[in-house]
Length: 192
Image (cartoon, rainbow, N blue to C red):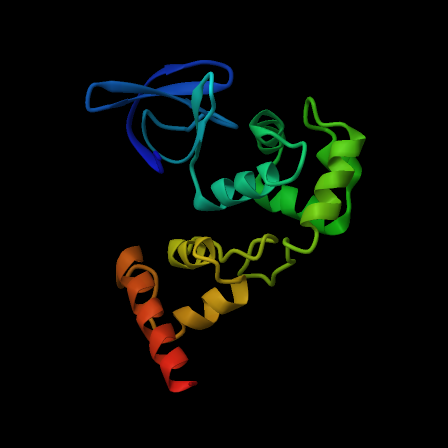
């Protein structure tokens, strides 16, 4: 699976960009065009019998929300991309948490029934956070917390695991995640 694509944008179309990665051009569907010509996109790779498609996102939060959306029965990548093209992840999460059917159905191709299904299926998964969190419960600008959540930690568990770990900027994301996992492992062993 292709999890990330980094390189130069060599072509742009309405719904995708072509990213040159060491001489290979990857067609990546995006909800909105990246600002610069050099990009790093977190990707979701879909393999079907008749096609392989990459969906790219500038942040892990967008990718996590996309994956939540397509996890709902009847919601495919096209509908999820449509939703993310008209609203940022925080706005989508807020609409789901508040049950705002109208906000979700503003996306082209997303009707009232689909919006209602998204709310019913995802409302419990989307938490309203405090000022330092996005409404999805993911800590703003903290890739280590997002990585821990991708590993199955809840937002509060990720925050707890990162206490005592060097702050953002003092260590790399990988070092912070490794330290948090080691500390969590010691806690789990001590708790037995």
